[in-house]
Image (cartoon, rainbow, N blue to C red; front, side):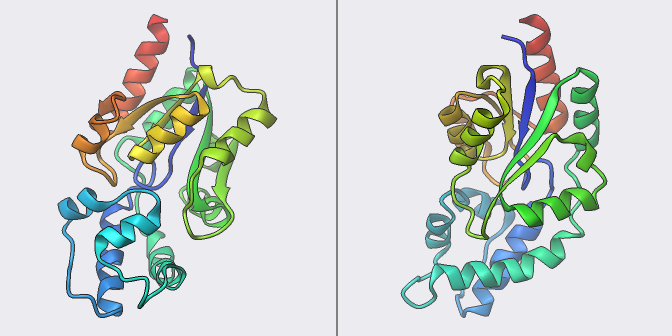
Length: 219
């Protein structure tokens, strides 16, 4: 079936914030007195959704430090520094290629919508997107209902949409919405974890755009 709509994940997909997230995790561990630290590779091994479970895997003890307290401290560190994060390799070209192909583009993110609007606008790409769909708080719950509501309200056919993400959760969200999914492994989770979903996995955004446009052309 032809593709009409690209649903983009933001963090780790369009926004290259993985190195910052590793540093912010280690900063949070130090702030609350935990001895362990993570490298990029070991971070990718433990990252995932729900975020509470990822924090447990990182070694936080919620009986000592409740998740809302940790999440607030993390975001107070992450958000100001995220202004320096670049777009991912090939992001601008992928956005332009989809636009040239006549595809609509929407971001579906677990970020708070105000933060998402600011981050996208700061990078000069707000005009690429019909909608920016973000959550109402900093706790990064599931994106499924947000996406389902978008499809109900917009009239887009989920069967003619493709989601591009960097996490197992992105695949789960896409499947729950009835949307195809392409995962790129330059983000927050390991290639092995992404391949275990059975979704197409590519090195980065140039390859994701090539794959989707090639598949659409052949359909």
